[in-house]
Length: 189
Image (tube, rainbow, N blue to C red; front, side, top):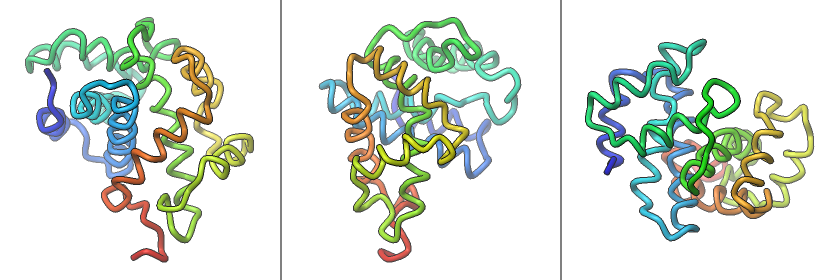
């Protein structure tokens, strides 16, 4: 099973861009929270989140086309590779998310972008971010405009969960790691 340490080691030679590393951490910690929600292995889900954009920095136009084989060669399990590929469903892969792990990654990838943007605007960062504030920003299509809201809602539907509930889980997971994510706010430094 893929560990978080192994995911970090695999990423080391592929992902160096600070904003992409931060995104992977956001997804990592949100995925850990989703694992807790579903009663699954937190570190394993975090590892998938940490590794999900493995080839993006080097191959942005061919995202996920340079992922399976290199990870396979490094001994990553087929189910973990499939989970990573599934987050590009309908965008750059035809791997439909089927498990809660895959559906969560598909949803959380974009969702964490809006959560991070919300947190960055607040004096106390994510530490006092509530779902109500997130929902207001989610409805404003101009806010974090690059985050695909339709995709997030599609993911929530796949999970059989309301956006409000998924956001609450992810916010809580990211709050636990506010300092590592640089989301503790200017008032808490």
